[in-house]
Amino acid sequence: MLNAYLFYNGNCEAAFKYYEKVLGGKIEFVLRADEGPADMKPEPGFEKKIMHARMSIGGNILMASDAPPGHFRSPQGVALSLTVPNLAEAEKTYKALAERHALAAAFGERDRKTSCRERV
Image 1 (cartoon, rainbow, N blue to C red):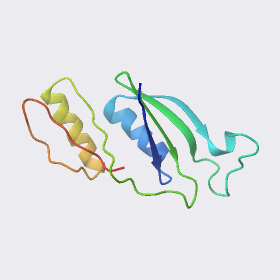
Image 2 (cartoon, rainbow, N blue to C red):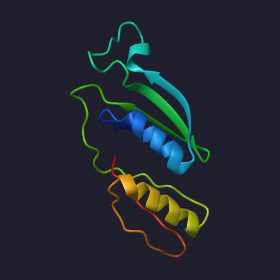
Image 3 (cartoon, rainbow, N blue to C red):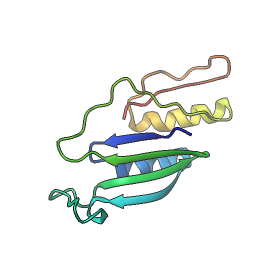
Image 4 (spheres, rainbow, N blue to C red):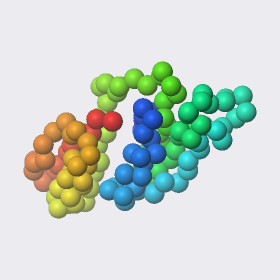
């Protein structure tokens, strides 16, 4: 099994809560920076950021964290895909994601399969 691990620029918690709502995911685990090992003290202002989070979405696992201050790099060359059971669900999901995110492709039907990529 291969699972995606995303790094956010301080907005991991908000993203996971949004995915939980829009994608029907379930946040299974959250570890905040101030709850980590004693030898990994967070920088001031980073204490409540996410050191590690895990979410299940339709039987798949998505993991993520907030990149430590000064370590975030905008993702390049990466795309996530989401498979949904039918065209109506695809359109609903696409519209929900498009409300808050810049999506890389317009919604459209191609052989009854639809894809969109989200830039995180």
